[in-house]
Amino acid sequence: MKLTLQLGLLALLGTTTTALPAQSQSQSSASTSPSAAPQPKTTSPGCGKHIPPGHSPGDSYRANMISDDGRNRSYLIHLPSNYTTHRPAPVVIAFHGRGKDPEYMEELSQFSNEDFNPDAIAVYPQAIVDDYWHVTSGPNDISFTLQLITHLEKNYCIDPTRVYASGKSNGGGFTNDLACDPVASTRIAAFAPVSGGYYQNLTSSEDECDPSSVEIQCSPGRSRVPILEFHGTADTTIPYAGGARHGFCLPTVSRALRQWADRDGLGTSNKTEELWGGHVQKYEFGSGELQGLVTHYRIDGWKHVWPSKHGNYDSSKGTYFDAAPVIMKFFKRWSL
Ligand SMILES: *[C@@H]1O[C@H](CO)[C@@H](O)[C@H](O)[C@H]1NC(C)=O
Ligand SMILES: *[C@@H]1O[C@H](CO)[C@@H](O)[C@H](O)[C@H]1NC(C)=O
Ligand SMILES: *[C@@H]1O[C@H](CO)[C@@H](O)[C@H](O)[C@H]1NC(C)=O
Ligand SMILES: *[C@H]1O[C@H](CO)[C@@H](O)[C@H](O)[C@H]1NC(C)=O
Image (cartoon, rainbow, N blue to C red; front, side, top):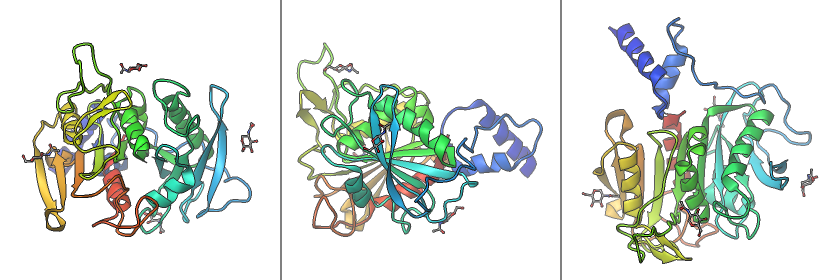
């Protein structure tokens, strides 16, 4: 009975390109059944390569790569203290907000803190040209991100099925842009935008910004994209209720999330959990193994600030929880 179930699961895995709960994946790769379909590669060409001289596991250091457009791009990388050149590690790429830098993002996100992230390599790229992430003009940062992933795969021992993206503000909006991109959404397993700006163009049929109905442009290359979003109701930079900004239109945050749920085939109703006396509402879309494939934390009275129990670079005042461990737990559930 157990065997039949597992084979059934394998058949399912072989024909789907959607996000899978990470546990089912390891179950299938443990199987030696000759009928098993080829599994995605879980090691990278960088396995066996030495880390750059002068650096050791546990270190954070700046490194560079030349992108296809000839630009010298910089990123900060943190290796877990138990990184080895023969065990493929997951990777979390974290995008800073406008005008910020990788060191700021490392401190803000706490992805290099091993209490929160004991096993993933954390990578903090540097935006260029006014220090923000470009999608429609200037450096093509989506293309840069894809090249960065390939570069990391070549130089470090990583698991290409467990590369994740997160970011704050403009970096959160960019994380969402990666999730909406036909190619990036097939290279990155899950996405966690924080206080992101999900800017939309007005279409010819829309004459002004209506946050509750603006058309949301999004063309992911897979049918089930895992999304975890955090947003404060007192955010005055990227308001929860959306609105016109910088010549674009921001949808309401809840609508942006419902659209993700709908696009992911989960419907638009959610399971709501009241946390910390109802000051934090956790909305999970999806059911069964897919429960929470799209998850949103709405934080009462919280501003444009990365959620953290203690004060951080964004704010001297803390809130109910740290985002980093919640994000890492979410990422652990999903792989390509
Ligand atoms: C890229 O920039 C870094 C830091 O500024 C520098 O050390 C490196 O030599 C540059 N690489 C190339 C190929 O110019
Ligand atoms: C949005 O408008 C900009 C110009 O402001 C354009 O470059 C871009 O392609 C448009 N995006 C979409 C998805 O239509
Ligand atoms: C989740 O469902 C509750 C109850 O119907 C609703 O009030 C809330 O707005 C929903 N959340 C989102 C993000 O749609
Ligand atoms: C090191 O490696 C494993 C992955 O096998 C991880 O789960 C573990 O928590 C790691 N980190 C530390 C600090 O022990």
